[in-house]
Image 1 (tube, rainbow, N blue to C red):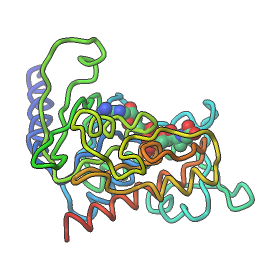
Image 2 (image 1 turned 180 degrees about the vertical axis):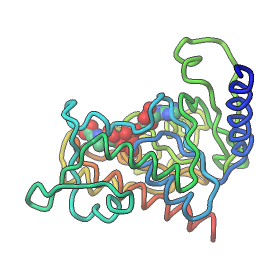
Image 3 (image 1 turned 30 degrees about the horizontal axis):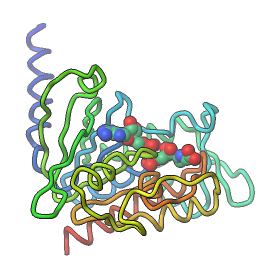
Amino acid sequence: MESTITRAIVTRYFEKLQQHLSIDVAIVGAGPSGLVAGHDLAAAGLKVAIFERKLAPGGGIWGGGMLFNEIVVQEDALPIVTDFDIRSEPAGEGFFTIDAVEAAAALILGARRAGAVVFNAVSVEDIVFREERVAGVVIQWAPVQQLGMHVDPLMVTSRAVLDGTGHASEIAQLVAQKAGVKLETATGAVMGERPMWIERGEATTVENTRCLYPGFYASGMAANNISGGFRMGPIFGGMFKSGRKVARLILEELDG
Ligand code: 48H
């Protein structure tokens, strides 16, 4: 019995991993924007893997604002909220509240059920770079990275890579610094986050969601920070809309 259970887990896990060593889209970070993008891309029939460093996907949703586990969305993001079967309550002036735990759980389940596979506790530590194009991700167990163990990583190739790593914009930093190329930003580099200005931050999160280099896209807080946008606090409509926008852009490129 003991070996049957072990064999079942090992067999299924490695089947899943083996089926995702060469994929259409590698998404780094299972925050709200990465999960919405993963859902939309997988629902459109693409082979999608989401690599998440933490044990629990969901990114910054769980803690709401300052650990008060409610998030806010604005009316124009409600169609996405409804797509994931998330319940919301009006909060006045076109804003709605959502239980943060329900939002995180529904986004994770929605992305998974649409066909996106989540590899949790896996960190992306580098990119694959070929023929002037971002061509995949270099992965490592997050605990191995955190312990500073000297262990070589493994590689997953993809037709597109999405940086959904939030504030740190980790993958864009690698593209700009390690590959030494110019990104599609005003300076060609990662410009960095500006202070709080909710309306501007929400708008620029969506505007700044784009292809930044051949094969390389960013969504959510990463997209906004890469292009020097303002932050917006615990309002998530911009993150949801950014995830949906980047999925459309990637689909246009890969299907076209
Ligand atoms: C694997 C990684 C790596 C890596 C990071 O921060 P997130 O929730 O992402 P977004 O952009 O979808 O949402 C941002 C939102 O949560 C937020 O922070 C807001 C609205 N802030 C406003 C404000 O004013 O502060 O999730 C990113 C995920 C996390 O789960 C990380 O663990 C993960 O990416 N991650 N996973 N490899 N190299 N880097």
